[in-house]
Length: 392
Image 1 (cartoon, helix red, strand yellow):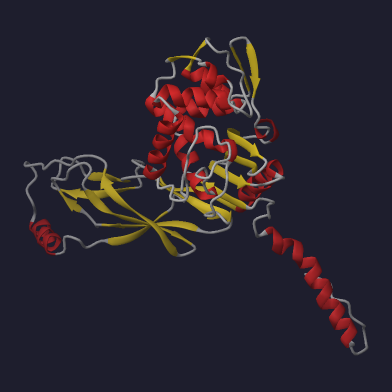
Image 2 (cartoon, one colour):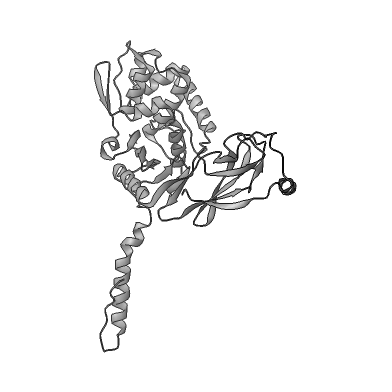
């Protein structure tokens, strides 16, 4: 409670009241700001939780911008889906003379696709990107067509590619949201994930050091790619596995990108948590079985439900199930529904299924009362009752 200034035994003046209000607003302001995401210096940005598909923060996320060497994430995806990492590539002179950053491939020397991917991702080699594109598609133009086809497949509606390295071009652009989509997809490829998390590697006797400083600056960061041209400014996409979350951050034209990414990661960790409300195939209850070879039948969720919620929100699960079942009952058949709520509002529903079979026991005759219950059951086959699952 804020101690308002007062005058004991005297009437409080308007000046005192005004001072009290100003003081209260001043003292409350920091805690109010803490509830909101920190600002960033980027023209366009997005913070995305990959497992739940939740956008936590964004600024101009759908504005097309030059993206510089962040382009190479798409290049790597297309190459890995069309070439084997062990394939050999003999370097042509024209591939080695591309302007901009380089891994300094040697014309006439032979590299594997994976070695060139290291050079393209870790030190942002434009020569490596060109060599990979021409090896994969025969030419830069043909490879750009493959990049655009992949962008369409991933619903990257604000993107266009005309080269594999990211040098400025009229038809070379993307958006923060599209890059986040692409990165989520790319990180599912184990070779890509391995390469972008590598801090240093030696290729043909030359040690390459990763340009992504966040790998050393922030615990949990596992990639992904830096970029810069004078027209694009500094571009950065990063991925961090922290507190059970998989966070993807993209900033375009950001002079303080390292700082901004770390601040957004910190804010997400302090504001959100990933809750596994129900776990696939984990038994949550047993339902009585009549006339079966077993007395009870375990029930489990058909799939897991993971929710990203603000810290302090209440997550609960309510299961709608039948009072009992008659054998036979088949494993995997629907038993009911689990309703997952966040602060009382339904956020997800999951089918509940029988985890095992329940065969009919022909040696157990139905009693008169059981026959009555059977008739009632058949007449009200979908009758159920609600049960609060205590596991959350």
